[in-house]
Image (cartoon, rainbow, N blue to C red; front, side):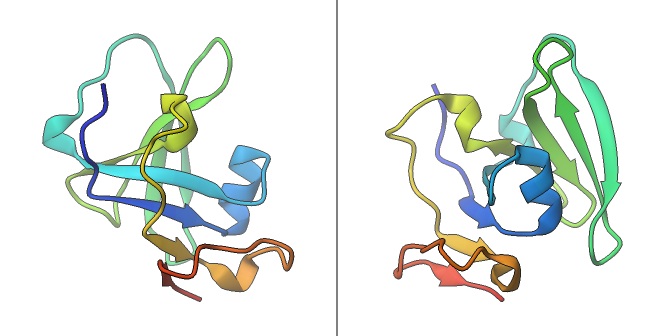
Length: 115
């Protein structure tokens, strides 16, 4: 059972598009103190546009991203919303990197929009 997250965000950056194989990524951000993991994972580290580093942990069997941590967001763990396989999971409250958003994608009007 998931606990309430700090926020759910949609990211339209090119790295998230490539990582997910979709036109955006959606993640829930949790306080690191509330997150525990078990089982094996592999890591992939990438630098963001501003130079911060994100360490992605993915399943060595299927390749799905299970969670990631970022130097830019201290004390938080980001989990892709699809990992919960729960259509009732809360929707996003913020949409970032919208300058890279595909023209046909429409975000909910009541969330924060960041270019």
